[in-house]
Image (cartoon, rainbow over all chains, first blue to last red; front, side):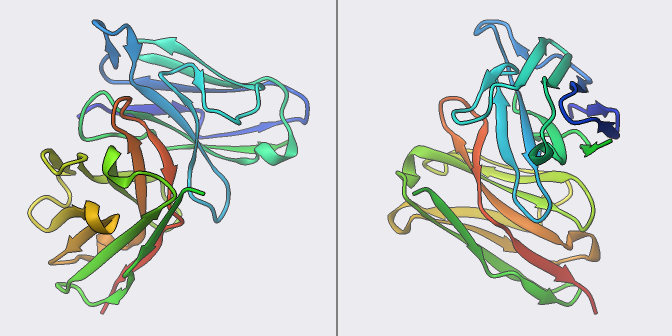
Amino acid sequence: DIVMTQSPDSLAVSLGERATINCKSSQSVLYSSKNKNYLAWYQQKVGQPPKVLIYWASTRESGVPDRFSGSGSGTDFTLTISSLQAEDVAVYYCQQYYTTPRTFGQGTKLEIK
Amino acid sequence: EVQLVESGGGLVKPGGSLRLSCAASGFTFSSYNMNWVRQAPGKGLEWVSYISTSSSYIYYADSVKGRFTISRDNAKNSLYLQMNSLRAEDTAVYYCAREISSDYYIDFWGQGTPVTVSS
């Protein structure tokens, strides 16, 4: 199984500041023939189901604010929130869909400092 | 409006069974792969099972293999999860999740149905 490891486990950032969450996979999730990284980022607010933010490691889902961006390739990925807003308080998960089982990172809890 | 509405959760004793359902609306259900993902209280997300559009491909997490069975009825726009031999560690909110069949990522989740396994 591909193990997804996020860092940090929790993060406190001031409003308007940048938040960065990292995700590392135990093996590459880059499908070379398609040149695509099978990696998604999800946001889960308290009491709600997850919501997709980013897929193919860097493609923003329709309707997601452009302050959210994803980067990385192979085994190392980053979710960046360029200017933190109060409504961004949530737990963020990365997930690989390169193979089954479709594993998730353990989650990163983002709070306001 | 896209909707996924789970039902069938509840309290069950260890060793018991439950059948979860997920009613889909607002999109062409038969064109999407489907997944079940669970979340234990206060914990992270755990993928449980996957079924392709025509049920040709089915996969399970090792933790539920041999005990859970995923199925779908495209005519009824419904997804199911038959859960047998339930254990305390199966206690979780179970989410039905839609996956774009050509791109493979989950793009929409239901609100979830809680399952509690306890004596």
